[in-house]
Image (tube, rainbow, N blue to C red; front, side, top):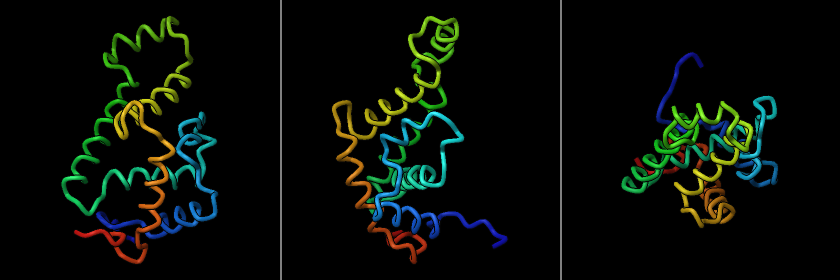
Length: 151
């Protein structure tokens, strides 16, 4: 319509992602992290990214929700800083050609590593996490403004 509604699930986006998960046409997280061009980032990529972001923002349990949101904030700050602990000095060093990777390779590698580290721990299994995430997404009710989650 002509209004912006916040705090409610995007029914069409959820239905799209649930259909893609059920049919195996969603973009797995490993593939999402390997996407190296904005031109390669299509609707299936967006659906997966939306679902991961939604998972971080919502939960029935307020304490778990708070923890998940804190992880998301930390991850977004890491993205903003180019995945460097000292972004200014390390980026300048990188730009002077002292890095072994291209910028795109650095971002792809570090975005995946930092995601795993923050979400499931350094030795965590991304595939196992993704299976839990898919089950969570499939349980959401697209007809309910909160996806069936409690307020």
